[in-house]
Length: 177
Image 1 (cartoon, rainbow, N blue to C red):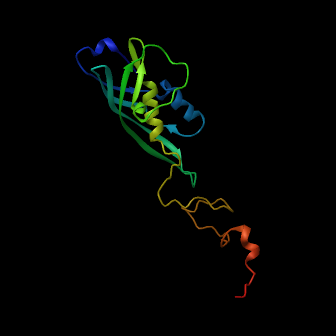
Image 2 (tube, helix red, strand yellow):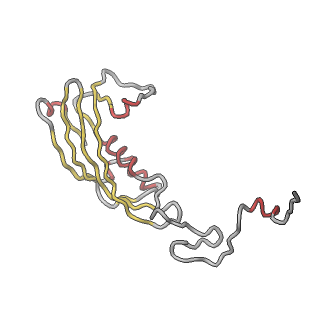
Image 3 (spheres, rainbow, N blue to C red):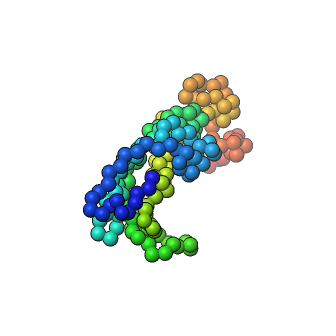
């Protein structure tokens, strides 16, 4: 999604759009690696306005994704909704080198030319909302380490051991005081 700077002279620009995930390479890569599956296009609703020497973009991005539980591998759907505010300042020249960012730089970006492309920031907002280790539920019991049964669905007949296998040899030791 791009906005021409000339369109922001005296007024704020409100935009609503529905865009396919295929328009966002970073999100498409997540699908390709199996991290998640996008179930709906991105729904964007945001306002862009010129304020003094910068441009403020604030709004919301929503979508739905299917992920696998980190404990039991069950697939489940989650709704993604992320609100954001980002400030853009005009940059004189492109930076080819890496620079260290301060905390205030995390909500501030620079742009060049006569338009701003919001696609990178929109993708970042979605990526930050997808859980690193998604759980189908808070009390997920996971899989049995012996037989692989989903412990949320059934209790398996595998023997449970007490403690770590490393210390099983020490079970029979008796220490006199």
